[in-house]
Every structure is written in structure tokens, then in C-alpha cells.
Length: 389
Image 1: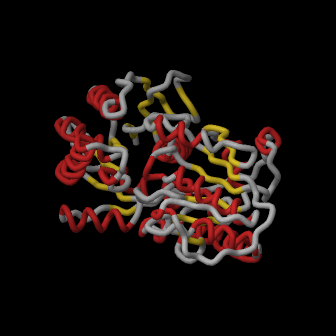
Image 2 (image 1 turned 90 degrees about the horizontal axis):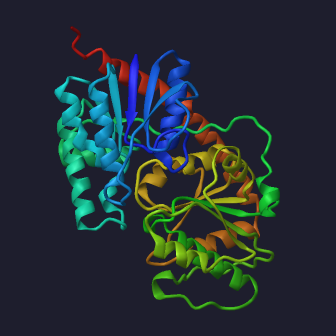
Image 3 (image 1 turned 180 degrees about the vertical axis):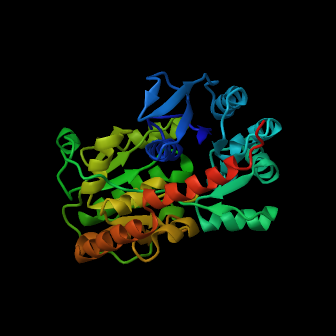
């Protein structure tokens, strides 16, 4: 089976969840004997982990980069003999009619309800609304990564999407030297991982952490009303440092504000990948997932699979992934993250309990083997529908 994946920045992964998804899915499909092509934006080797890379340009603009690259990718795919194409992100659904016009079966992973992200203006939200409609009208199959998202498409468009989550598996490997480089100790830091964008709440996490630190020193802290907490304070001493892992390409004002909070205890090492990323996940005392939009977030299940203690923003999507195996906090209207961190740091037995429960749930529900089984079956079924000369 010859499969193409388009709509991501490409492989190897160096940006976000869809890139990790393309890398993990593509590598495993190659190992199963399939020919996989991933359309990429960055120059590099012709093949990576057995995946053929086709590099095409993109317009370097917040609102045009993804769609321009996907359009060129779809045009290129028209002249190749793919058995099936997997499109990532509902914003790229406008290419579906092109692919269907030449009778290439296509599935689209719509991700979350992207038009709800705070970073988009009216035009951006309209593009995603059109993307949802195009996904419903033109895709052979719509894939949701969480039941919450699938139910939205059922209600709004009368579809019956396929629900396939992301996967997470941590290989048995030696830690990299990233802890030494950052001056960190095993189980001696709090980790946040995400792109620095408003709906991922990096600033709110930093402010909650500063509240925790201030209270641990015996001082009160004044916060805006929407960040205030009525939770009881727990006695905490020696609060571990906070590592803010990520970068922001399209929110420069937010990034500048974040870096104004940098200190010996609030670290901004940038976006790290591969062994450095996995080492930080494995060795964190607590992992924070503060996203408020999207379906299954890869970093969340990776935090669980790594054996980490996970605290997540209390959203339906995060609840679906974490169940009773992780802890939860609110960021608005009242901030409870600082209180939850204080509770865990004051009684570390809760950390050990969540660590064990999270790893077990990730192993049972989110193994890459099961995820690839589902995608392989879906793509083979689509490939079987393609007319042959």
C-alpha cells in the first residue's frame, strides 16, 4: 500500500503533535511493509526512518503557511500513484475535492475544534468552520482523536467519524545529558510542555507557579480577580523549579511576556525533542498539561506513559484521556493550579499513586501498536475502494 501524509510540517518532528504523529505512524507503517510519503517544509534527507520526504515551499505567514503548503502538496499528490492519502488538520480540508476529483481515497484527521482557539481572528475561525464542512462533505473518512470531537461532528454534521487516539510509548534508553545541561535533578522539577499560544495557557501556569512560590515563603500575593484562588493553602517548602518547554512562532507578545518571568527557578530551554524531551518527561516530579482546546494531546499521554505524575487542565478532552489516573486543575474563573501543586508537594504519596495509575492507563489505551493497527485497517479499506485501470 502506498500512502501519503500531508498537512504537517513534516518529519523528523520538530514542532508539534501532528509532526510527531506523522513520524510515529509513518515509521511503523514502513516497518509493516507499506510505502509512506510525508510532505515536508524543511530541507533534509530524502528518506527518514524509511519514509520518503517530499519538500515543498510554503508562504511564511500565520494564516497562509499551512494552507499554502497543503495546496502544493495536494497538487503534487495528484500526479503520483498513491493508494490513499491522510490529511491532517481540518484547515486543510479544502484540498479534499482536488484529491477526490482524481479518485484518490482520502481520510482527514480533523484534530480538535480548532476555530475555538483564541489566536484566530474572525477570518481564521471562518476558515476552520469551512474546513469542518469540507471534511464532512468530501472526505472518505473523518478521523477524530477523541470521542468528544467525534460527538461534535455527529451532532453538527450527521457524520459517524472513526475515533483513533494518539499513541505514546517510551523506549528503554539511557537518559540524555539534558538534566545536567539545565542544572536539574531527577524528580526535582515541574514540567510544562506546549507551544506558547494563548489557549495553551503558558502565562497562567507561570503566574500560578509564582503564587505557589510566594506563599511557600510566607507572603501573600495579589493577582487579578480571574486568577485568584479560594483554595486552602498547604505548607510547602523548597518548591522545585518550573521548566517551560516550548516555543511560540505566532504569539511574540506572549513570548516576550513569558520571558520577563525567567529566573533561576523558571526556566525556558526552548523546544527540545527526541531523547532530551523524553528524558525531561521521564524525570519530572510533576507534569502540567494546561491546554484548553483540542482532542487528545500527545504530550499528555506521553506524560502518562513516561510514568510521570500528571496534572491537567480540567476539560472534557483531557478528562477523556486521563480518567481517574491524573489530577486536574482550573485556570478560570478561579485558579486552582497553585493549590493542587501545593497539595501534591506537601504529600508526595499522591504523586506516586498518580504516576502508577497514569502509566497503566497509557499502556492499556494509548499504545502505538493499537493506534497503527486502526490506521492501517482504515487506510487499507480506503485503498481497496480506489478504482483501478
